[in-house]
Amino acid sequence: MKIAIILNGISRKKKKFYESILPALQQKFSVSIFETRFANHAHQLAAAAVTDKYDIILSAGGDGTLHQVVNGMMSIAPPNQLPMLGLIPLGSGNDFANTMGATANPAELLELLSINQPLPIDLGKLICKDASNQELVKYFINACSVGMGPATVKQMAKAPQWLGADLRYLQSIVCAFLSHTPEPIEIKTYDWNWVGKVRVLAIANGKSFGSKIYIAPDAKPDDGVFSTFLVSDIPLLKFLFYLQVVKGKKKVKDPSVVYSTTTKIEITSPQSVAIEAEGELMGFLPATIEVYPNQLNFLRV
Image (tube, rainbow, N blue to C red; front, side):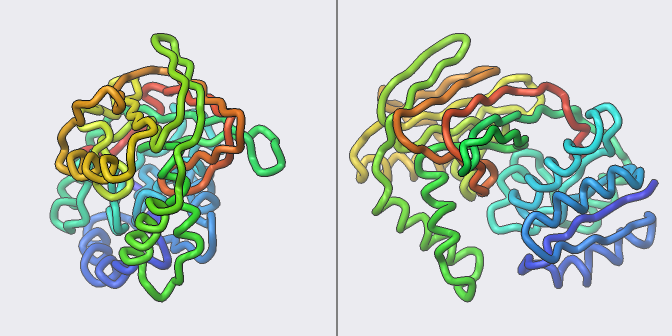
C-alpha cells in the first residue's frame, strides 16, 4: 500500500509530525512525504499523487490544506478512480477532522491505516465568479459561506505573520466583527427561498467551521444533503451572544436564525458579495452550490 502524505510546510506542528508521527508510520508502511513550499502547492502535489497511483493520500495540515488536496484530486480523475483520502490534523481549527474524528496520534493512525475501512463521503461543488467575472468551479469538503466568513478571511490576509496562526485568526475575527455590515442576498433552493440581509450564511457538509463554530451540529458528511445556517440582520451584540451558544454545540432558537437542509442552493446579490470555502476566498456571487454524494472514500475512524 503506497501512501502519499501532503504536509503543510508552514504548520507549527511540523516538528511533531517529523519526530513522532512519521517514524511510526514508516515502521509499517511505504510512505512518501511531499511538503508544500508555496501557495496552492498542495493542489499540485495532490494531483501528482493521483497520477502516480498512490493508494492513500493523507492531508497533513488544517482545513485549508485539506481543501487544496481535495481540489487537486478532483482535477485529475473521476471519483471512482481516486485514491482514498485521509487526514492528519495539524492545523489550528481542524474542523473537518473534528467532524470525522480524525487524529494525529501515531498509534491511532497506525490502527486506522491497518484496518483500512473507507467511508464514501459527500463533496460540495461550488460555481461562482472570479475577480474577472469568469466562471470558477471549486469543491469543498467541510463548508463554504458568505458574510462573516469571507470578511474574516480578508482580515487574515492583512494580519502580520509574526502573530502566528491562532492570534492572527483571533485578531481577524475581532476586526471582521467590528467592520462587517450585513449584506443583501437572495437564496433559492428546491424547498425554500429567502431574501434579506445576512451576517452569515453557511452551507455545511461537516458540523463546524471557523474553529469549532457548530453551524450544523447534526450534519453527517455521508447523508447526501447540506446543512444550512443563516443569521439575518440582527444586532451585533445579539450575534456575539448567539455565537457563544453555537460554539457550545447548541442550536439558536430565534426566527432570525434559520437552520435548514438542501441538496442545491443558488445565491445572488445586487452588490459584490464574496464567498469562501474552508477559510480560503473563492470568488463572488452569484453562486450555485450542489452536493455531490459519495464522491470520495475517506479513511474513517
